[in-house]
Amino acid sequence: MKLYGGIEAGGTKFRCAVATSPNSAPVAKLEVPTTTPDETLGKVIGFFKEHDLKALGIASFGPIDLRRESPTYGYITDTPKEVWRNTDLAGLFERTFGVPTAFDTDVNASALAEARYGAAQGLSHVIYITVGTGIGGGALVNGEILHGLVHPEMGHLPVPRHPRDAYRGYCTFHGDCLEGMACGPAIEARWKRPASDLPIDHEAWEIEVYYLARGICAMVYAFSPQRVICGGGLMNQKKLFPLIRRQVVEMLHGYVQDESIIHHIDEFIVEPGLGNRSGVVGSLELGRRAEADTAVSWQDSNPVNSHSR
Amino acid sequence: MKLYGGIEAGGTKFRCAVATSPNSAPVAKLEVPTTTPDETLGKVIGFFKEHDLKALGIASFGPIDLRRESPTYGYITDTPKEVWRNTDLAGLFERTFGVPTAFDTDVNASALAEARYGAAQGLSHVIYITVGTGIGGGALVNGEILHGLVHPEMGHLPVPRHPRDAYRGYCTFHGDCLEGMACGPAIEARWKRPASDLPIDHEAWEIEVYYLARGICAMVYAFSPQRVICGGGLMNQKKLFPLIRRQVVEMLHGYVQDESIIHHIDEFIVEPGLGNRSGVVGSLELGRRAEADTAVSWQDSNPVNSHSR
Image (tube, rainbow over all chains, first blue to last red; front, top):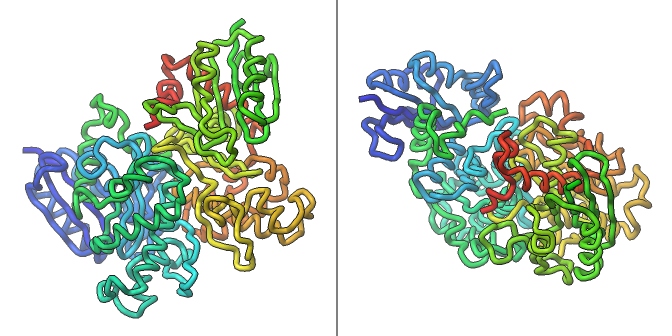
């Protein structure tokens, strides 16, 4: 039986799956650490060669090139992970397997998966952010994945500094952008111990919540999303959710007069409905859409890559 | 001959026009100050009654209600301008003239007008910001006007504080958000004289450019637009453009690797192609689309109001 293949290409590990449909239990799975392109991609290709693929979706860490007309379409571009710079992902898999292959950011794929199968079903304006070793954000706007000139880079939104925070920031590009102040390594650098060692009543979390709330407010003012889904390793600390929600409501200060925010913030800022599977399910869904681009529903009539320029 | 009617409903004045097509010279125009709804809307209705309308577009200051299913669809909602709170605009004109009537934010309409007739022709991902007595931003994403839960409120993006700026901010909701720090009244309050009295080498402009550049960077990271158009009274000070461009490039710090930003920033951050007519042309274009929602081009097949929820 022909299967959909999906790759969540992360900075720490690659998670691969083959499945009959994006949200069904995978027929097979593989996790390999992200080391060098040769080593990691070799194992990934080996895995998929054991299966009969009908389409493949790749949800990648970035920055990536999504411009169909670009000579480096399908590449990871200027990532801080040097050995992965200028790595052709989509082209490699397309040539190797000869099946319809879709390519997008991990967070865009997660937003898509959550809107189709998870915590944002039926919604057309959705933000997915991941908070972990980095911070990233993907968006669905009018039911379509957002690209634009390149793709969103919401981890790098400028944020006001917490009044008691003198940390200079972890981002090699911007210092004190959202990612620079609130990613896992920033917490560790600021407090000289891993985030996982900091008790929930530690000041670290007040500062973390401050930055994440400001980032989410920026997304609310920019996109006016119907829901914001927060995933990633740091968000496994579930106690952060009520703190973030309270701070977002305080910060918006009644300006956005909508029931979803004023009375239902618990349903506005939420955990991923797919748990840590959003990225993999998203990659399978990208594969499904790459295959189904002749279908007629509103979702399928706009294949993900048709708006990349 | 039947004409399109357009209303740019601004906080200072209402600008109205009737025209055979959105970007042709208007057959007739009216400007009335924004006083009370009774007085201002009475004059506007009087003006349009002298013409034979086929459709009407309204591009309004906000916040406004764009949710088609809402009992207050078409209303100005919680504006700081108290006498205009909860004013039904779209319903009033629809009932009075009985023609297809479209309703959107002034800045969304301006983004639409610039993409169709102005400085962003042929582009699908466009930001229009206005900097004047307030700051607002509209967006075209995948060629469609952005609504979402409510509509974008980019004037209220959180921004980092300029290191030498102790001004507490003008925004009654947030204090030191983008609008709070960079709108015309904020400049006047910070320096105790009107912005127009401050020479271009005054420190005021360095601080102004700092905030506007950070706001634009936030929009770039959120939307990845192909072009950012800056209009509004303050931007008539053309010397601000090169300063803003330079600061945006510095702030992005090479992170967004695209020719448009690295080599063509002059074409990335631009003046409105329609000058101060973006809003009025946008309102006429909204009217044209309200009438033409059976047409077949990509722009017409997605009438503006079909994505408001």
